[in-house]
Length: 179
Image 1 (cartoon, helix red, strand yellow):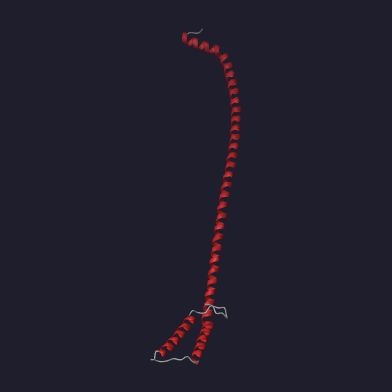
Image 2: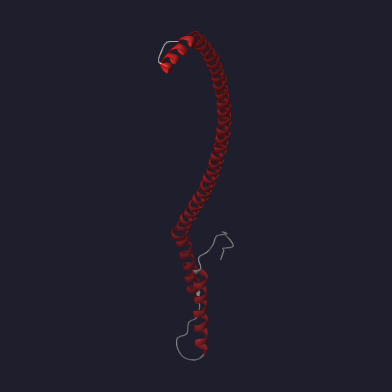
């Protein structure tokens, strides 16, 4: 319930207390008409008690309720500020994690491209080296063939010169006498 004058929330005890006091007053009036018991007639002390009660409520509100409400309000603001900070930090962490994962994916993709490029370059280099080795081997093979042909011709030439002496030696061994 809000006070019309000060626009603040009044404690719930004010309307309840006022209602109880009014019920007691009405009850005492009806009890007086019944003929028996104690008769209470509201007089100026009733207004004094009402004023005293309202003053007490105002003092309690000023001294007790308002500071407690302020502390609760500050605590609520602090908690909501911390919740907002936590939410912002969680969002920031998620954004950074997403950026980190994207950077890792990009780095892996670049690494794979670089690896493929290096593999292609190594394959080309291997082909060049193999071609060079084949070329060198072919040149060596040609040299060896030429040398073999030259050696064969030289051996043939020497064998041709010695063929008569070999034939005579073989004939001598077969026949057992000189030819």
